[in-house]
Image 1 (cartoon, one colour):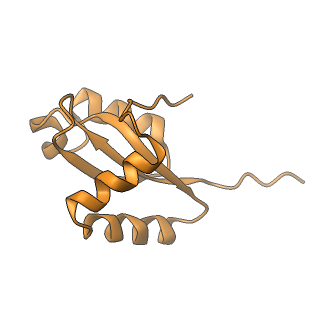
Image 2 (cartoon, helix red, strand yellow):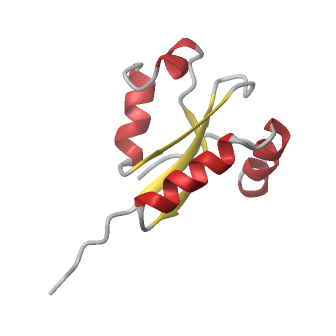
Length: 97
């Protein structure tokens, strides 16, 4: 018997100039990024053109993912940038396969 374990993602998006951050969570990262790019995800990301994926973490359950999202949203902006740069020092846009 094969059991497919659902994955969840806490992610950070930014805008073209890397001046705005958005933190969210989802169970389908590729679909959610497309929604942000199309302007159908949130008013904030649509208003500020925030759809460049620069960081994400993977979780096995929704509760831990939501907890991490809330934690990151409460961090100072500098801490968030330091976290992103620890994994993505050039602040490159990450691709989802």
